[in-house]
Length: 194
Image 1: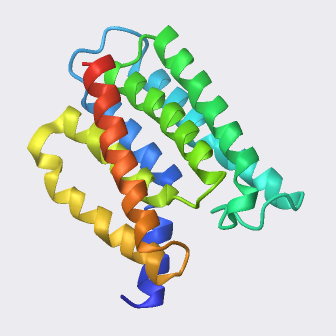
Image 2 (image 1 turned 120 degrees about the vertical axis):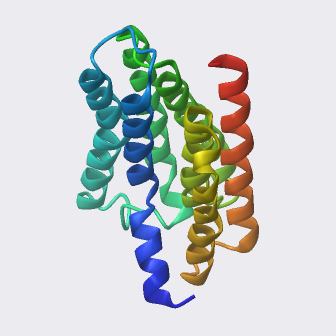
């Protein structure tokens, strides 16, 4: 895989972009929505899953606390991940208060828990956030849309390969990130939000 293709895949399927896409699809396709308007639910999800985390990353980059918004250096990840966990936790609370679609609430909960797990692992090892960030949302979309989502799971090895080609992660780190995204998201949604 050429380096420029890897860079495009890495940017297009950035975890924050994946979050926005997943939440918008889940909220738009929810047939049983009884709570707040879909627009309010979507805006809440976008703000807490991407808007606030990205704003925090940009501020940290400007202040020299991180090298780039992908947080490539493991030792720079702690503060952004703590802020991410807080954003996702508050996002879950607001989605619950607004009675947003249950699966949207569940995905935000997964983002909080999975990011907390990544934070714990990152203290010792640089697990791939891109791998978790593509596999977790796909699991949630599978719960929402069923087998029509299965072809999109082919994006997982492409995104993982892009991170390895760019020398941002090892094969083990992308496999671990994928395993976390798939299993943790499936378990949380199955047991808590079905």
